[in-house]
Length: 123
Image (cartoon, rainbow, N blue to C red; front, top):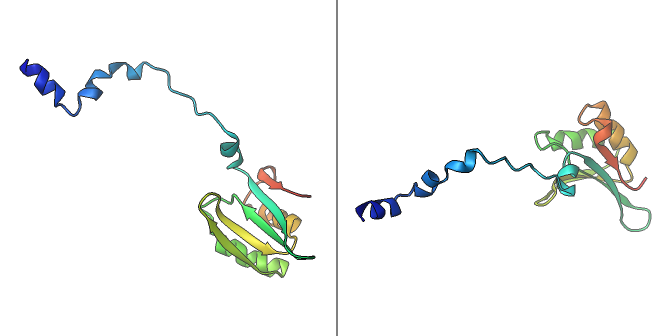
């Protein structure tokens, strides 16, 4: 009876009883559509009003400084831009105008991403 009380109050009792966990096969990580697309860099164009448009780039590696990329793109493409912080999609680089092809070639030339990992939408 005294053993039952000590064992019931033992905070590690659940871990002590689960000896068979090591023999169980590990669950494989299932890849959903979102996890597969996480590796890609998506370049899209959004129509504003009239002839005005906006190019968005999302999926750039979080370790890369996006401010430097934005600064170089603004100089090279003669346009303005900003970085939008989104909790769901991460940091998104926005550039004025339709810069899809230019930003795709820029990312490949600067070795920020491989050509196979860049998806240009709407072209």
